[in-house]
Image (cartoon, rainbow, N blue to C red; front, side, top):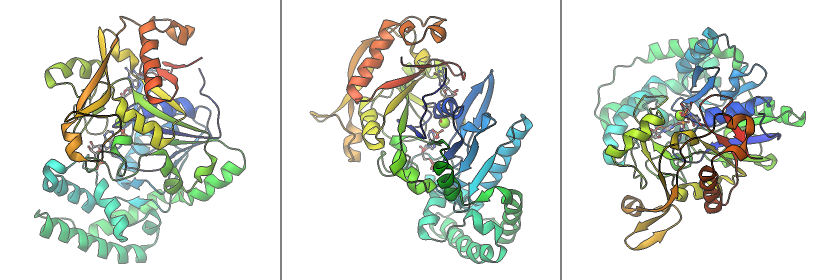
Length: 431
Ligand code: GDP
Ligand code: IMO
Ligand code: MG
């Protein structure tokens, strides 16, 4: 089955991340010339299964498993050069040679960012998000402080030294004086090491905004791959339990330098239930004694950190916000196979907060902490026919189609892509 065609397509997460963006990006990538990451870093973990081989990607876009698309790491991404080189080697060891370009404006994660991230999570305590400890918040903070290091700086030894001295000292003081941790990093070692990373990555580093602009004018197709999901967006998510970038579709313009005016299709990847790795209120969460079955069936363990994911029922309050803020044209609904066998499927349609019914996500943390899910109970299905991939949408169980129609009615967005297994070919288009 081939994906629908458009010149610019955006794939974003419509929940708390780990919805299956990697799988859906790979599905579209077959028909695409450029696949672009536009925010986040190696906090992301995107899985693609091809012929029973599992690929876990963190920084390189999930189109890389096809030979033809060019993979682009846009300026809005934060790059840990060591992690990136490891990922390139990981792919090369499997016979894949990425056609990769990295924005010269992308900010660089340095060892002191990871040190700050450790201390910060501890310091923030109950208000932390439970970060992936990849240095994400500190690197974006340094970008906004305007003493961040960019990929281009790694190619200019003098400017790099000048900037590194400022940023290093600032972060050393932050770790020791504010967070109260010891700090054993050496400026000289980092300087030498990162100049070396620059030398190794030099051929990939370029002005990717110009590359994409020219490609678009020549009629090439571009696919944007989001990381994380709406509830982790630093503006629209459940702040402060978020990541530190904007995960929404609108961010492609700032995160890649491609104008938002040109977009044809925005796909929100939505798991048929919800998972969350990290800390925040989670109204439709299953209590731990009931969570195991769903977690095991869905193999809900973090792709990046291996942490067990918290799991719960589909939350339409969250999905409504994802449709509205991203301007979704399509929902790709994944992991429907995992729900097979549940007699009843509760779906959260609203929150009750002290007698008030909320149908949109509250900004108030107090309300979010108090939110109790209001469920509509839908009937489940016993099995999905084995030949469903040949026979398509019509062959899906009636109650599964009913589940999908309920989601469409409540979210006001069509479900056009349905995923019933982790393998590349286990994807159906709505006819
Ligand atoms: P991402 O971060 O959004 O790319 O998602 P992850 O890769 O972190 O997590 C999604 C997991 O679900 C991966 O292990 C995928 O292989 C798997 N997956 C994706 N779609 C399906 C599906 O339809 N059914 C099942 N059973 N697994 C799926
Ligand atoms: P993908 O792209 C799920 C979560 C972390 C934490 C919060 C902040 O695979 O969907 P950070 O390290 O970004 O400062 O952590 O965000 N988080 C994710 N959860 N999927 C992800 O990415 C995530 N990236 C970050 O667990 O709660
Ligand atoms: Mg993931």
